[in-house]
Length: 126
Image 1 (cartoon, rainbow, N blue to C red):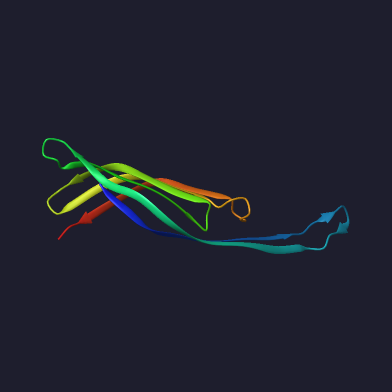
Image 2: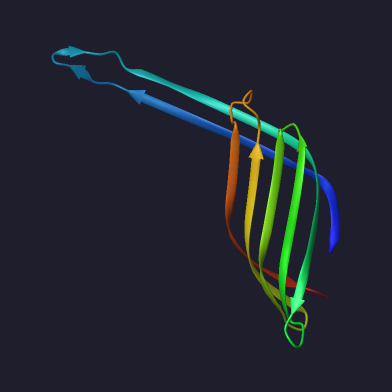
């Protein structure tokens, strides 16, 4: 197990554009068009732990894990990752599930965000 400390940056730009036109009966309506843009850049200090727990007779199977939490520009951010891996001579192969969440607070144009999904990684050690 290792203790980690660092920073996480979140940078997002979202743009919405629209264009509407049409008629009401025989009366033409003027076209309406516009756009809106929301931007957010957040820096947060984080602390956490990461590591791997080995198992099996020869110790080549392992469970990688990572948990961290932080705050700063956002009210709170945290992530967790866990999976299953196998070590070969100089290569580790692992499949994990990762979850990342941000709470930006209700004064931000984006109040919260969470991302999660699978990942496959191959590490070569030399």
